[in-house]
Image (cartoon, rainbow, N blue to C red):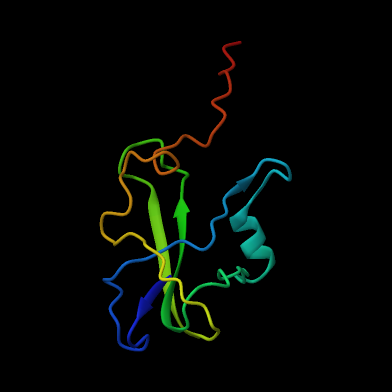
Length: 122
């Protein structure tokens, strides 16, 4: 999320802080994309209660990892939502800016998601 003066016109160049993250669940063996597909793209998350009220941009992103075993080939898909947060919080979370928040060699960005089974030679 990024606190902005006007969510309708801000370009998103300010600082962003993370409120949620989900990927592969090793217990259920389900990727979050499967959950998103089941729920027609809807995903709930909880904004920290101490977050200051005001206009925010919320960035939702999915990173396609099917080709991510090669540096620079992970595919990023993102969108932003405009919200007006109410409440009595006072916290101003520190964050990161885009571009530069990720590196092509970061764990989880550069990753082989396949099991690499032995090839049958028989």
